[in-house]
Length: 436
Picture 1 (cartoon, helix red, strand yellow):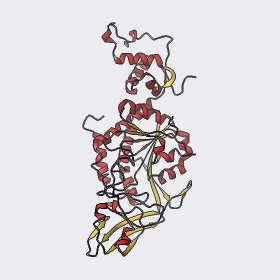
Picture 2: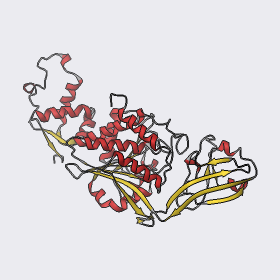
Picture 3: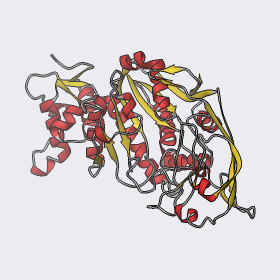
Picture 4: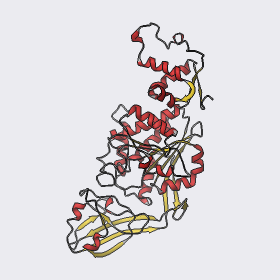
């Protein structure tokens, strides 16, 4: 972790705060503006536009949505709801309207949450045309009988869906995949935390010395974005991706969460469980039945990609989720830094994750190589010493680094420097494939 007070975390938090007010949706200028800002941090990112009506598997790219203003005024001209105050006030993808309605008719187009009376809920209608407003239930109950002027200046039109893509080559064509979405309006944990963390992770990847693996990173609108991206790239993804991670709701200080791939046996599952288990043993495990974000698309029948979910307070489970309470106070530099550190630990492990085999018959003579205590006394045999002995005992070329860590119960960060010493001493062979 950064020693100077969560340096990356503060940078990520500031970027999220800058983008927080922007009204994003699955299409439109809000997501374009967000991607252009991320592109300033990652100049290598390519921004793609996919036209309305494009067939993407069983779906079609929807019409583009534009929203300029929206409000409701009472008979005295008081604005009881105003999109300018909070962009969650508008039902996402609302069609235009400008008319006077009774309170009863207005109520048919209002959305609130009685169980959370002081929060504005986030509600959308992407695939059925309707108009509406969202408001705190406590304020909804204060509306008086009478007529109301409702005005929504919006339009649906043939435009395009926008997403960002980064491909970072390594020494091999084996790819690690990161996906996050940036289609939500002003909610901090869901979903500004994912994009800002992944942005900083990309810059870490670019700085990684002797990068062995390649990396594919996408910033997309949720669901329709992953479907669209796969419709254009699935053969290459299936050929090259060895581990994938959907990153969502990762900016708060609560416990870490993990959702496995559909079968739960991929390299992504193994490395995530290993690192979380050693660094954050209190983490919460979900099942694939709890899916709800883009991991469900990547693991769908026919796609079957090795993708897991990394989260902190999982979507749909924390009380502020999809409400106006998911504001900048919910995330923190510390929370963002923690997720960044988790992901970079996973990257380090994957880069190092090969098969290692001691190349002597019998235990090697460590003393002559300066790897064994030259004075035999009981306090010379530390935990690090015994970890080295276990590495020697189980480095038979049949287990990769993660398997070795799991077998001997030592964190990969303990094992990696031991392996480096063994390689430097000429005692260990390295392979990309297990010994048969």
